[in-house]
Length: 260
Image: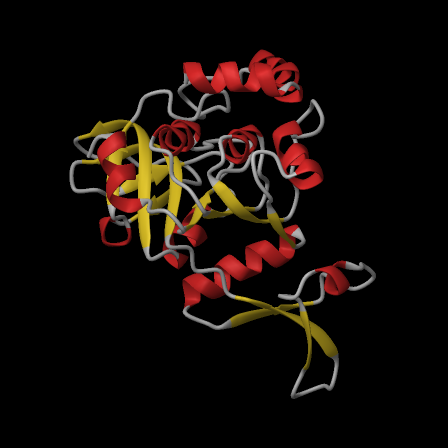
């Protein structure tokens, strides 16, 4: 499908949407298409929301954010995110904050068809007091008190990858984060790729998403910029630095949004 067709078909107002990618292969083009199609009331999910989530929040797409860290990597704060939390502009934003380990385990539980995940990772933090979806649970074998977090099952997961074949099998390599788990946990999935090829040759450490877990593929060269796609292009550090000034000022952000 084209990117615009895929977003129109798969992302609906009020959906829970995960755009996953860790430093690398971030589905930025798909996020911009969601903004252009003016989706509203979304629950956005991501382990590490960065500038594309700042843009989605500033554009009024998000009602809630489920996350474990947020920032402009190597630069500083997400100012549209902060404006929404501190001053409710362009609207209020509900937060559900977890640890990285908690988020990863929630995706794994969702991908495994389990109702929750169990871990030790919240000990010594005040997150359980702030987040209703973090609960103590007693191990039935040892009596140890652990922490339970509910499974994450997004309505749609969106990831970017290097390539797909013409049958819809997807291949990605490099820093892969939780893309596989997010796709397996979601009801629907969209994968944007640098290119569609006749066949996938083996790559060391590559992850292959088989066609049966992928709802749609859209060929979007450069779809991860300004993040990077290993083997295709490097990270555009200047873009991240430039975003800081744009995002600090509502008028500058609005001008950016109008030009998107």
